[in-house]
Image (cartoon, rainbow over all chains, first blue to last red; front, side, top):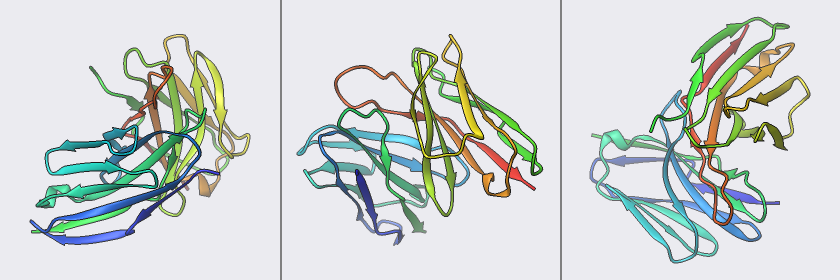
Length: 110
Length: 115
């Protein structure tokens, strides 16, 4: 059974304090790993898709990396508006349905 | 390109009633998936429709059903509502092409409250 574990569950940062969120996965035949951002009461907003180990993608203050066992979402010099829940999901084997982690709730204090 | 749209955005129902939620996917996307999100359970997959056929189904009772129309728009129905059905219902669309991973794009959700 595919498993996705995100850590930490919650993270509090000061504005400008860089950090990383972790997504570890156990799947057979990874086809892709996704990162989403979700604000309270809203639908997840797509951030990145990573397809293979060694791949990296960047968007503003966010950078996602992928290894064979985990992915990191690095947040550089975060701002209060980066506060949200960040979800990780994987798609593997012949399935089109992603398996989601429980998310990391990030709060950035001004 | 317009994103995924869901209607209504908010619903209040009482136990025993039924409800229908609607989802319009991104233009050109033929796959629509539905999820239930609650604080305790996170995102749980309900079902996926592709080319008007249910292709995958999650572990939910038969009270939850759906359908997809020829224009890829989808509806989800919940009959005999229970208090535990209160949740954010999310629709996601994707192109479902062959080969690499298929990215899903989510709508804003429908907040259902069952009293």
